[in-house]
View 1 (cartoon, rainbow, N blue to C red):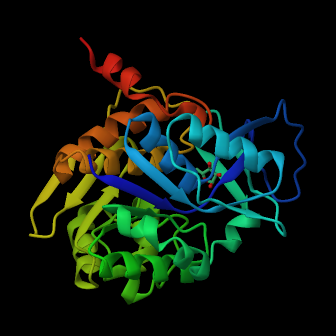
View 2 (tube, rainbow, N blue to C red; view 1 turned 90 degrees about the horizontal axis):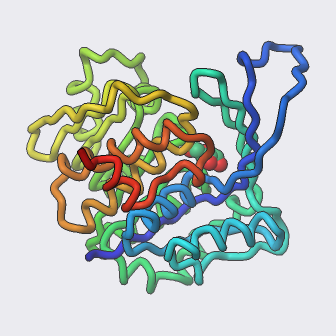
Length: 306
Ligand code: RIB
C-alpha cells in the first residue's frame, strides 16, 4: 500500500443545532453544545486511518486539552502524528458550527495554531514528504505553505491532491500546476472559475482548470454525486445514494477526500476511487459531527452487504 501525507488544519468543533439560519441582529438560545474533533485536514487524515490507509499528518495544535484530544483521536486510528507541531503561542484551532434541521451547516473557523503551519515547519519535515506517495491539502493553513509544500511535493514526484476548501479566488498558477487532482464542490468550483455554477457547464468549467495546469478535476455535487474529468479528457459521473437521510453534512467533503486518497493508495483507478469515496460520504452525512461521523472500513463493508 502506498503512503499518504496530509498537510493541514486541526480544529476542535463547537457544534449546535439551530432551527433556522441566524438573521442579522438575532439572538438565539441554543439547546446544547457538543465538542467534536474536526478541522478539514484532521478529518481527512482521520478518514484515512478509519479506512486503514497508511497516513501521517503535518499540522499544528496549541499546548492545550483540545490539541491533546485531537492528536489522540488521530493516533487511535493509526495516523502518524509524531511530527505535529505544538504551538506555545496560539491555542488549538476552533470552529463554531451551526447545523440546520435538514443537515446543512454554517462554519466559523478561528485558525489559532493552524496559522503556524509555515513553510519553514514543512521544510523541517521534508523526510515525511519524501517518504509518501500522495500528499493531500485543504486551505485552512496559510496559502504560502500550501503553495510551497505542493511545489516541493510535485518536484519530488509525489501526487498532490487539493480540496480547495474554504475556496479563495485567484489560486496561484504555480499551485494549480502542481496538482494531480483538484476536488472542489459546486460552490468552490464557481469561486475558482469566477462565474456562477451551471450544471450544464461542468465540463467547460473543469477544462478551464485543466488549462491552468491541473491534471484531473473531480467536482462533488452533493446529492447529485460527482463529476470526473480525467487528464486525457474522458469523463465519468459517479452517483450518490439518493435514499440517504441527511442529518449533518459536516466533514462530507473531507471524508470523501480521505477515502479517495486511500483507494488510490491501494491501486484503484480514479473512477473506482471516487465511487469508494462517495460511499463513505453517503454514510458521513447520515450521522452527526465531523470525525464522529466517519465510518470504519468494517462499517463500510457491512453497509454494502446485501
Ligand atoms: O469540513 C468540516 C470542517 O471544517 C469542520 O470539522 C471544521 O473544523 C472546519 O474545519
